[in-house]
Image (cartoon, rainbow, N blue to C red):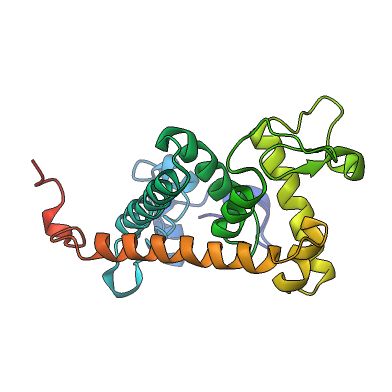
Amino acid sequence: MLASPGAWAGEPAGDVAVAAPEQITALDPVYQRPEQAHPADAQMKPALPEPAKPVPALGIDLEQVQDLASIVDEARKQAQVEYLAEKLRQSPQTVQRYVELAWKEASRRIGLDPELLIAIIQKESVFRPKVQSIYGAQGLMQVVRRWHREKLHASESLFDPVVNIRVGTDILEEYLESADGDLSEALPKYSGNARGYAKTVIDESRKLAQVADTAAAQVAMTPGLFDPSSAGQAG
C-alpha cells in the first residue's frame, strides 16, 4: 500500500501526489496500478484457521457411550423396581415413581448412592408417602418437621414425595458429614438410635446394588448392543 501524501520524510507533498505510476512501480515492484487495485481486498482480513474438531480418545463415540449408559441405568432401576415390588407386594408403578425420585436426588449429590436412599425409604415408610408416626415423622423418609424447619419452605409439605426425599437426603448428608462419612454412625442418628437400624439399611442397600449390577451385566451381554454396526438394524 502507498503511504499517504506527505508521509515520506523530506518529500514535498505535491511531488508525491504527481508521481507517475511507472516511477512508483520502480520503487515498489508490488505496486498495482489504480485500475488493477481491488479496494475490497484492503478490507479483507486473513482467514483464521478453523478450530480442530475434538477427536474422541481411541475412536470412542461419546454419544453412543452416553446412550449405552442410559440403557444400563434404566436396566438397573427396572431391576430394583421389580425386586421391591415382589418383596413388598406393591404395584411396580407405585414403587417405580419413588425409585426414580431416589435416583434423581442421588444424582445431585456427590458420593451418595441411590440404593442407600431407597433402603432408607423402604425401612422408614415401606414406600407410603402419606404415613405419619406418633412422634410427628412424616412421609417417605419420616422427617420430623419441627426439627428441620430450616430445610423447608413454609408452603412445602413433607407428604410431597419430592420434598420429602430432598429434605431427608439433606439430613442424611448432614449426619454423614458430622460422622466423617461413617454410615454406621450416621444412620443410627438418622433413626433416633433405633437398634439394628444401620445394619438393616446397609444390608438392603447392598442387596439393591447387587440386583442392579446383575441387571447391568445381563444388558452388557446382550448380543449386538455394543456393536456400532448393529445400530438401526433392529426390527
